[in-house]
Image (tube, rainbow, N blue to C red; front, top):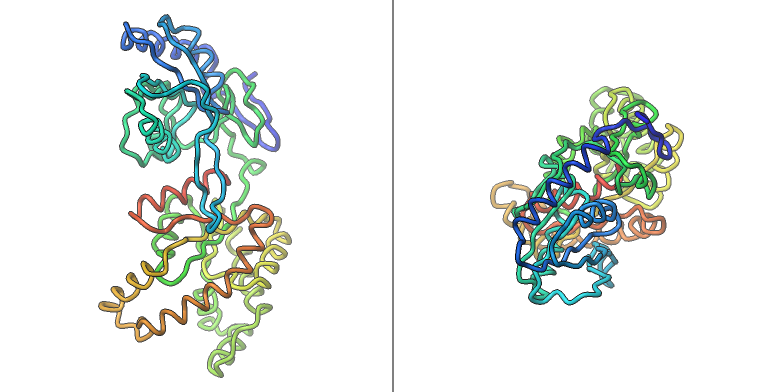
Length: 376
């Protein structure tokens, strides 16, 4: 079968079954040579690697054993970022030569965690075998010892890989056929306190995923500059020191969304909207009217001391009068009070994604990409 349907998407054959099996046989042969005289422990990562692990292990001629673990995520008690843990160990790791068997490695973030945990448990050595590798997404520095196939950033299913839990049973690997039926428009928002790096990460997201960037402030300024009826109302309110009502902001956002749909972009990234619980409810409604589902909010989580330090350093060159300690504390307090109800609203149905915004820009971006890739 050349074309299959999984849930709401169509897929075409990308790597046929026979080619996969032949490559697995080559990897097994090399492992037999490399580990001659040793007794390695093969460690399959569930759920996706179970078929690859079975086919590979059938061709291993070494004295060895095999086990499976799963990388589980849970929410921390005081934060919403995901914390990973390995579950399912039934064989001692200490002193063993481990061969990890994985279905696919893209960003490498999860595998980076797995490697660290295995060494912490006392593994003598850890070798990595993956059926598929996406070099364009890879952000880590560890070595991948055995690679079945290098592939681009295509959405794939089959041979253990799934789409929302379905499609693992197909014996070949299939990639999605990009059609209007398959190409769901993504809609996400990014939220972060002043100094969280929201602007930097937005630029990277827009570039990587071909998102249309919608900034509330920019949309308001365009309406004013165009001297539209709404723009005149907004200008008058701003000049009188009034807040722009949610209804007017929503009307402007709706117009921008309509224009965005015409651009044939992969998705929409909202910056600065929604800022209140009422706006979050309005956004769901107006997107639904445009046949778009709001996929979630990415919240950049940064320690307040770090935020303060970043903003005060920025003040040395920016010349912004509101970048002083007292003003910054006030802005941070206001941000937390406004956003807490929004986060709770999205957490109820799993649409809030907390991402730690501390560390290197590339590392933060890799964490954000992992969230978006799961949404896509």
